[in-house]
Amino acid sequence: MKKTYLYIGTLLFMLVFWASCTKDDLEVTPSQENQASYYQYDEQIEAASWACYSGLKVIDRWGWTQISWGNFTSDDAHAGGESDNDQPGYHSADYFRCTPNDMGGNLGNMWSNTWKGINKCNNLITYIKSVKEKDFHRQAVAEAKVLKALYYFYLARMFGGLPIFDKAPVPSDAITRASQEETYAAIERWLKEAIEAKSIDGSKPALTNIKSERISLDAAKALLGKVLIYEASLFNKKDKYSEAITYLSQVNKELTVKFPDIFESDFNDESIFEVNYTKVLGAGNTYYGNYEIQLYGIRSGDVQINENIGCGWGFNQPSKDLVAAFQSQNDIIRLNATVISSDSAQKLHDKFKPNDVISWVNEISGYWDRKHIPNPTKRGPSWQTFENNNILLRMADVKLLLAEAYNRTGNDNNARIELNKVRARVNLPEVTSSGEELYAAIKLERRLELALEGERYFDLVRWGDAASVLGPIGYNETSGPGIATKGLFPIPQGEINRNSGANNLTQNPGY
Image (cartoon, rainbow, N blue to C red; front, side, top):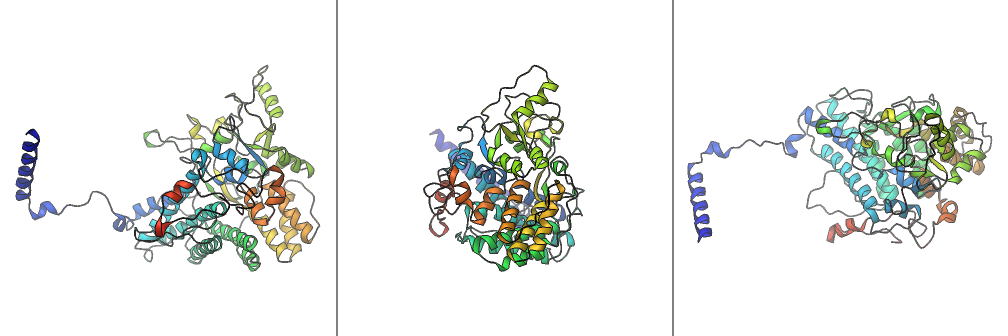
């Protein structure tokens, strides 16, 4: 009976309320902008533009970037951590035992968070209505296209072909998967659209005074050149090498920074594009630091090494094979800036705290990542507040891509010039070889120069060298990523299950 009275009372209240409403009462001004109106105003467009960059941050996705996947699956690094049970997804990559079930959710986080970045770019590109009116708006769209291309590139070299969205999808759109070749072609097209718009200028802020982090025309050309070389090597499209040279040779930077300083100074002269972090807490004590620095730091049982070297969780441990590659070239400068041995760390600690012997945790090779070292002076109040930036594109990468493209198009003289610029910086003798021997030297140089930066595995796959180089450590026909999977990682099963019918995602071969 009480329920009946309640329903009747509620109905009477609603009738009285409706009868008392006027036309003015029904004309309510929305308290929040919808998509159609949000992208009309400068302040909102600026906020949406910065949101496009947010998917590159490791604030909420530590360890899910290309640094981890490109290293752990290569001959350059071991997953490490506390044990094989610590982040099992990384160890499955290390042992070439990835499955669609995605133990630990690491691949799923990589997949979903990168797609979030793509979605933010697509929203800006689709819903901005005033592109023809302001330079700033044209700049925002061009930057969004480059960032979208970068997200797609990271996904494509891990997972292969992807659903291609030129605009923000609506519920009625069918989400079908394109081939890997078609996906790279779309990436190339978006980058060319952005470059041809001639609206990108990373030296100028849009509305805020934050400028250094923005996409520049150099960054767009560098990324396009890299994508073209991937197309050339993956799909045997030799003409793409010549096209890559056109764009890469226009990147207006030189190697003016000492090698160790590249990873110590933010926005240095060699950096083309990097992600910015700060140790300063944001509103509500929000963290805006680089979580991955803690992930890759020396696992010394929470013992700080000295004033400038802290401790971390011990992932990304350099392999003895990588160290031997440096030593074979007498490449001491890059060796010491890339790895730090347990013995060296103990000696530094002895000066900092005499008679304190460090107990290393899960020490695999006796070496630790030096490029991503936790520096206590760059840390705020917690491990989530390291202000180390992540460099995503730098000039040495461009020089070596140029050398490769010149070599593959028969211009060995220019290939040697670009290669030897990289070697000269670290006091190594000039390479004088030609043809396939020069090609091998360029490949080795990429390994040494870009070690632990997430390039090695993807280089081996696109060169067709993964089976011969990684075979001795587990890359094979029966597990993945491997020969049967064409070097691709599995799409997480949760993503496959989430899509059906016209939107069905097919799994990669071999899984």
